[in-house]
Length: 392
Image (cartoon, rainbow, N blue to C red; front, side, top):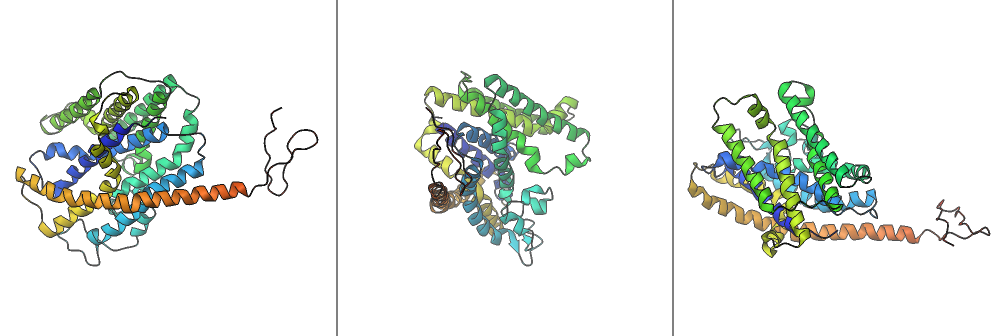
């Protein structure tokens, strides 16, 4: 399938939204009631991950190869970012005034194994590098992708859209149920990878529909407008409506699910424009490069934000904090560039080459099947492999 580079550029803005969300602990701005929704950048990442992996899916790639490639893509940078984060977020005897610093303990092992996100306990969920809990979700999504992709294969546009509608229905139903029964175990303790897989699955369904011909001939600005309009409504309903009614209460509680729909709409419209060959600033070299760095930026930005918080404290709310945004952003971006160029890309390239060479050597070691007198292909008893009947 053709590349949709605008999605790479769009990914950068999602990463920057998460950065703005975390800057509240260092240099809050007067519009923090809006910037707090930067955490929906994670929602965007989950939807985009499902979309891109299904968009680029090939039946020639088997499940073990897919899993190794995803491991090669995310783990080396995660490991380096985790090692950088530990001195910032851990101490032998933490200062009680530094609430983000935790005592060193065995819980860190979960972060190395990408298992911390299976707990809803904040001390475990945000252990290690606090931003990396989402990688637990991604690892689970990757594990499920081959099976989910097999389930999608028989469908075309209509079936994929029905699947998307079912996914949205399941997500909204779960959220409404948690509001109605907040003390139930499935509301308070359901692990985030299980809860959030609907976002990934929605991206998969929509990508499959687009692969099979779905074209929504609307400008991406409609998608941007839906996202911004939703955020504006959410800020208004959350902060300015004194006594929200039942419907508004449920809608606010379902904010992440509504954000999922908004993000998915924007992704489909942006991808559609690229397929039509339309012009896009998101495909500019700068934004595509920033998008390629966005994963590394996501991994390191919180470490730098909290390091500066430990050194400088928190600044009073004000627009002059924009200067601190710039002061924090520059080293975060520099660290992201270094992580991407020195760790992420070379490690992925070498790990993928090692896997491909290993598979090629294994295939070369299998002797070719020998034709029998009947014209079929006999089984090689040394390997147990049976080749298909030759064409006549």
